[in-house]
Each structure stands twice: as C-alpha cells, then as structure tokens.
Amino acid sequence: MLNCEKRCKNDLSSRGLLILAAAQKLFLKHGYDETSLEMIIAEAGGSRRSIYDEFGNKQGLLMSVIQQQVSIQTATIASIKTTDLVPNDALKEMCFRFVKGVLSDTLVSLFRLVIQVVPKLPEVGELIYEKGPLKGTKPLTEYLMQLDKEGILAIDDPFYATKMLIDMVKGSLHFKVLLLPNEKIADEDIYQHVDKAVSLFLKAYQVKE
Image 1 (cartoon, rainbow, N blue to C red):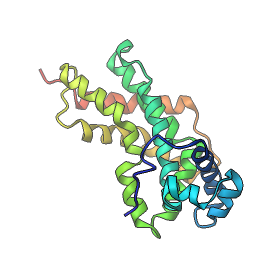
Image 2: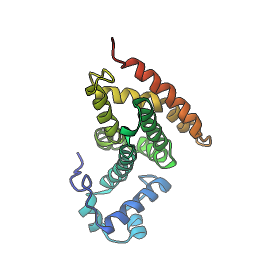
Image 3: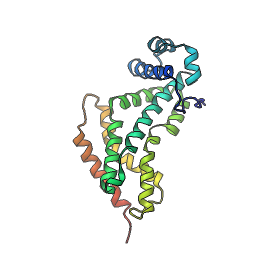
C-alpha cells in the first residue's frame, strides 16, 4: 500500500506545487507509464529527492494530482450558499457544478488515465476508491444530513443517498463524454438532466405524511 502521509496534507512547498503541475501536464500528455521522473524534473526543476520527500514516488504523484482535483471539486460545491436557496434549487446547483467538473477535459482525461493504470497498479485503484472523486461530494452529504435533521427530507443513510444522487446526475452524461470525445455536452443539457434527476431524488426521499 502506498504511503500517503505527505501528499494527503496541504503543505506542499513551492517546488512541490511546480512538480505537481508538471506531473499532471505530462501524465495527461504522455500517459502514466511513458512519463518518467526525469521528464517531470526537466519540466518543474528540483530533483528526485524533491519528489521522494513530498510525494513518495510516481504513484504518490498520481494520487496527489487526483486529490488536487478532488479538492477543487469540494471547494466548488462547498462555495454554494445553500442557506440562500430552497432545497430544490440548492441541490440542483450543487449537482450541476459537480457534473460540470466531472465532464471537464481535465477530469475526463484523468479518468481515462486511471483506467489504464489500475490493472497494472491495483493499489492505486484502492486508494482512488477510498480517497478519490466521491470525497469531493462531502459538502453534498453534509447538506443532505442537514435537510434530514430539519425534517425537510427523510434520509436514513445520507452517504448512500449521496452516492445514488451522484450516479443519477452524472451517469449517462459521463458515459457519453467518455465514448464520444469529440462531442461536447452543453450546459443546458446538463441542467435538464440534473433537473430531472434531482426531482426524482426529492420524490424518493420526501417526508411521508
């Protein structure tokens, strides 16, 4: 199992941030196997010691790239002022931003990269499953817990409900963008899909009178 102590912290040095940016750029351009530490060092500067000290190894670098994107997703969803919106609108906005991120060129490319890597490095798959994109939905889970506590919805398992909602709002759109890379999905199409999925979700968890 990989050691993630360093890369799970938000205390990267300025050199570490440069290495992380270079690693993401090169991984997406050349693939994981074809990207060497020497290529990353040539792009970002530093040394192998710099990489080992802050990321452990190349696998640690890949995990850090993914976790950085998860952090961006989390911050984007958490930035929504749910107190200013009715639950229906708040959930739709949170889900729209999540799906918009998942369908971005960067995350789609990372997803394809991970699919290629995992069969050779199953331990990377385990870490991604435990600490990957679903971690970015934490603000959504917390909001569902709040709605349940306030009696607005009846949600016995907020974590499961979050996973079900995420599957509903991203499923077919994510599948489409993966199989049809030249076809862009318009914001309006995302909104329409999210609107229907959230409406179904709210009906499933409405408070029974």
